[in-house]
Length: 226
Ligand SMILES: Cc1cc2nc3c(=O)[nH]c(=O)nc-3n(C[C@H](O)[C@H](O)[C@H](O)COP(=O)(O)O)c2cc1C
Image (cartoon, rainbow, N blue to C red):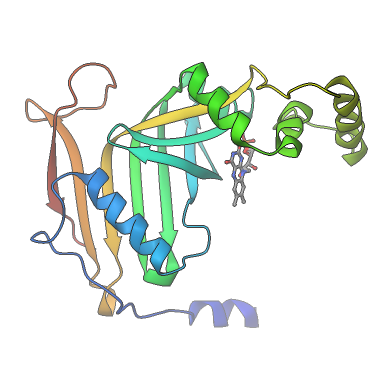
């Protein structure tokens, strides 16, 4: 149990920045944009790697995926629609994202609802990937049990023959999702655990607006105790 003791002593005091209401954008997507650009400038390692939490039958499940774009509508990522996360999102489109940029002592927590991207958008992104990754998307029955690695290698060999001299187009079970946020929290680590937390919620008629359809509502920003 020696190791356990030393883990308990591991802690950092955060001093790199602050987040004030007076300087924060009124729209969380603009705030996200500012922080994302700052993360890139600070050379955060893979700033677009984010945790994606889904929930099915009351069991949360979480994994890393790569953010592939963001705009006023929300956040996009790509995956296999028949994977465990794809199955969970088909049943329950409520999902959460989390970014932790330790180099700048920041966390962003996002809650929202996902929808599949239009086929054309998934096609366009798929075709921008290198041929090897495109073959990989066909070869991997993501989240299914396979006997061993040779199953994948055999599948790739088969596909290379099948697609020889042809374009590797998008498999129908692979594509993108858009997560439209209804709650976004920006967390900046501060000294003595007195961190800054600004939370934006999409409000309509005084209530949290979580459906994707209809008007977007307005963003309300509040500070939470750390
Ligand atoms: C840095 C990193 C980036 C990843 N990016 C993706 C991604 O963009 N899409 C994806 O489907 N899986 C990605 N993965 C793999 C997922 O974490 C996960 O293993 C896989 O999607 C299967 O998840 P599921 O069984 O819960 O559906 C990434 C993993 C890591 C560590």
